[in-house]
Length: 401
Ligand code: MG
Figure (tube, rainbow, N blue to C red):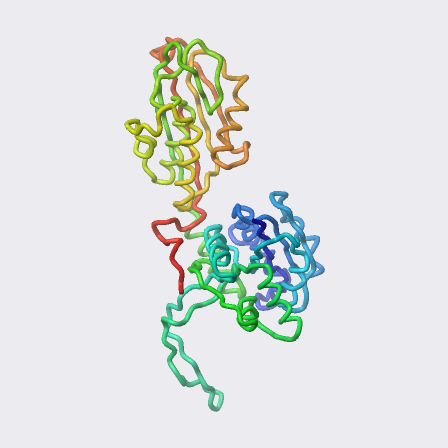
C-alpha cells in the first residue's frame, strides 16, 4: 500500500508576531517542522511525503529533509486550502491513501498517524479529533457584548486535529470542490461538503497546533515537562554454559568454535541480554516471562526472533529504541571478525540504524568459569524513548465516534 503524507507548512506565522515563519521556530532545540517531519519519518507506513511551504522558504525547508523517505518540497499558495491542493498535484499517482497534516502540530505521534490511516482504510476518510473538555456555548453579540444563546451538548462536540487521512479519490473529489469555489478550514470539511462520511478517531490532547505566542510557550512547557520522562534506560545480563557439540550463536551469527552455549533456545547470550535490556527500559518484564523455557514454542528458537517480538512489545507500549551497547565476555575465539555482522543483525531486529548498536568483546583473563572456557556471558544497556502514550493509556482500537 502506498501512503503519501502532505505536510502543510506554508503558514506565515503572522499570529506569532515573529519574522520567522512559525514552522522554523524551535521547541526544545528542534524546529517545529523538524519535529513534525520526524514523526512522519518514524511512522513506518508512510511511503513518501510532499512538504508544501511558502515559495521563499522552499530552500530553507530542504535543510530539514532527511533522506529517510522520498521527499518533495513544493511552493504553496495564499491559503491553506490552496496549498494542500498544490501539494496534492505532486502526490504520486500510485498513492492509495493520502494523509494531510499541519506542520504546526509537532507533537503528532506515529500511533495517531497510523490510527487515522487505519480508519481511512476502513471508512474512506478519517480525522483525528479530541472530545471537548469544556462546555460549549453558542453566542450572539448585542451592542458589542457577547451573550449565550445556547449551550451545546458537550458529548457531541469534538475538536478536529490533523492528521486527516483519505482514500485518494475522496481527497481528489474534496480538492476539486475547493477549486470550484468551496471554502473550508480543513480537508475534512471539503469531503463533508462533497457528501462523504468522515470518521473520527481518538486524537491526542498533546497534538496541539502552535499558532500563537502562548501556544509556543505552552509547547515549550510540554517539552520541558515530559523531556525528562521521555528517556529510559534498561540493563540486561545473560550467561550460558559452554559445552561441546553445540553451535555458538551470537547476534544470530554462527561463530566458529569447538563448543557452543547450552540452552533451551539457541542460547544466544547477546540477543538475550539485549532483549532484557529493552524490556527493562520499557518496564515490560523480562525474557523468561515472555518466552518461558517451559514453552516448547521456544525450543531452539532463533533468539533474533525473540528479540523482534520483544521490540514489538516495547513499541506497542509507546517506546522506540535509541541505542544499545553490548559487552560479550568470552575467553575464545576472538569475536572481532564477527562483530560487524552481529551489530548488523541486532540493529535489524531492533529496527534501528546500525550506528545505534555497539558490540564489544572481552575475555575474562583466565579467571573463573568464563575464563576457563566453561561459560559465556553478555551485558547490555539500552536507551529507549517514549514516542507515544502506549497501550495502557489509550486503547488504539477506540474511536471517538
Ligand atoms: Mg539466555
